[in-house]
Image 1 (cartoon, one colour):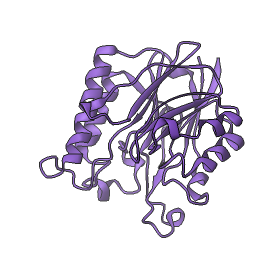
Image 2 (image 1 turned 90 degrees about the vertical axis):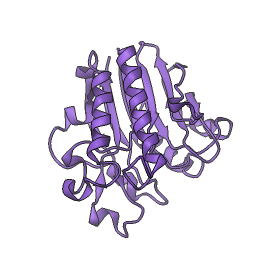
Image 3 (image 1 turned 135 degrees about the horizontal axis):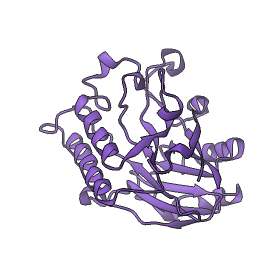
Image 4 (image 1 turned 120 degrees about the horizontal axis):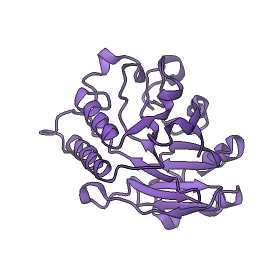
Length: 262
C-alpha cells in the first residue's frame, strides 16, 4: 500500500479552511494531519473536506486552543488519544489505516518564552509532556506506526537559522533537544525527513514577526514526520512545502510531506 502523508500546523482550521482545501486540491496527499485546529470537533469543517474527497477523519478539539485532526481519503478508524499531563488538552489523536499502520498526530506545547521551568510553568509543561511521551513509547514500543506533528523543537544545528543564537531560545535549547531525543530513542522512532534529506538547512516555521519572512529566512524545523524502525525503510519522498507559508493569511508553519509503501 502506497500513500502520501502531510502534517501542518494550520493555526485555526476554521479560519484557514480554504487554505486546507487549496492544499488538498493542489497536492492531494492521501492523509493530512492538522495541529492547532483551535475548534471543538463539532465545529470543524469536515463537510467541506469530505466534498474534496477526504471523507474519513478522526479528531480531538477544544474551543480556541490546541486541537488535532487527521483527514484521509483512505478508510481510517479512531485509535484513541492520550491526555498527556492530564490537563484535558487536545494534543494527540491516533488513527489506524486498513493495512494496520497507526498514525499518531501530536501537538507538543510551545513552552513559552523563558527556558526555565522554575519561572515559566509553560516550559515545565513542555518538558513534562515529552517525559510522559518517552515513558509511554518506551513501554508500548510502537510498531508499524508513524508519528507526525508540530513537536515545537528543532533538534539539529541545521534545523535552525543560527544554532549559536538560538541555543537559549525556546524550541532549540539543549534540555528540549535532549528530552525530544530521549522520547525518540524510547520509541525507536526514525526521523523520516532527515533520513531523506540528511544534510543542509531545513525549516518548516517562520515567525509572523518577520517583516519579510522569505528574505530573512530565519526559520526552524518544528514539524516532523517519524516512523517506527520496522517501517522506516518504507518512507521516502520527503519535502517541505515552503511556498504555503506565502499564501494569503497563512499559517506560520509550512506543510511537511512524506510517502510510504507499507
